[in-house]
Length: 494
Image 1 (cartoon, rainbow, N blue to C red):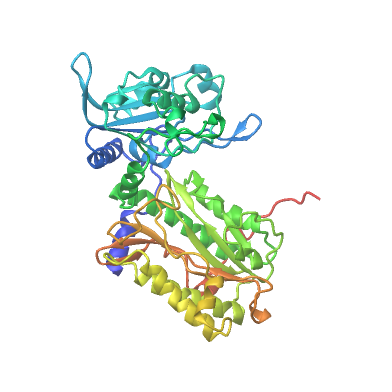
Image 2 (cartoon, rainbow, N blue to C red):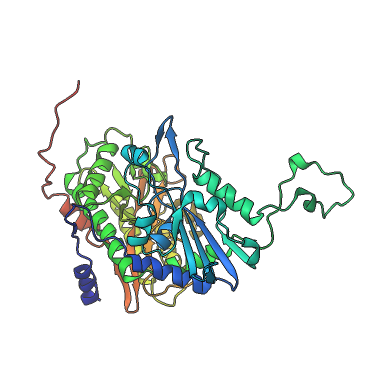
């Protein structure tokens, strides 16, 4: 196992490769995306067409939008990072009037010099062909009158619409227009009169009846097919995902050295995210969680506004996103560098549970085995510590599951049935004892979660985030080392 672990880390060493223009060159290749389209096509029913839409542009406030982030399925299949786009994949080759054959079409944002001056370069149709490898690429407005005869297909596959997008009156081919055009072209809704099958003699109140979706439109097949594809990672994906994970582990290491009782939760978050940027990570994979003391008992605590962490435990659940792939790594450390007896007792129990969970992450075993193994250790341990009287009571202090897939999403889709080689999952048991809990007050306000990202291999689990110490003694030892940030200070603003 050690040799495999070493080989993987050597293969996926942290290094940023830049082109002559100073931009990264280690993105997924056009061939990768093409291969995924072929794999999806093989899962599609005969005589079917699949339609994918890019993510919406989402408004932050007034004339400021959130930083755009592509829909993971759309990116997985195309490599395209811009909004207002449509991908159409056919199960069988189609033939144009002139006799040319094609089996997929990508519709993209149109090149626009003024828009690009304000908001950045657009790939356009030629870029979609030369850089993304599409033979058939058109502007988004061409989808509005695509000429595709959707009635000729037995199944029209699509993903459920979130309907959380706006209509931009300045753009006649924004996502709103593209989706509405799809609904028109496919006859998405049955006439409202056809809903009145249950009570044929009742007068219809059309304002209160939602139209039914036509039977040949299917929103389930793509969800299942994409889950099956994305839960198994290719070597290209593993390289990017491993880099994101190792960057996140480095963030945990640096904060262990830099932590002191006068730090704020926000400052701790900032150090993590600074390390991410230093290594070339574009984003965080999800809102950063930094909870000191009782704040750590809130599972998705993101306020991160406590001004001093004091001598409490600090739960830090953060993940770097690198080229679309996100890590999910959690460490819990004592702000003053030393676990109290109660803190150590809970921490070491969670560590033992995680060890049991990781050991259960083996090819062929049910996905739920990591949870069963970790929960057994915690249930028995909480009874032994006197925090609960029976194992059945322990659930309230360990209320979440132990494992999920990671990848382009922090909670990546998957079948969640059986562990297979080249899956990457989390193993993240935790114990959370809020103030006022029904146990000895000495345990109150203690929250511990330890989370690592585990690669499933034929020879056993490999911890890709192992560079961040997990054992309580190793954490205390690293916290005694000097940080590069020790002498970093800013002038006061008072």
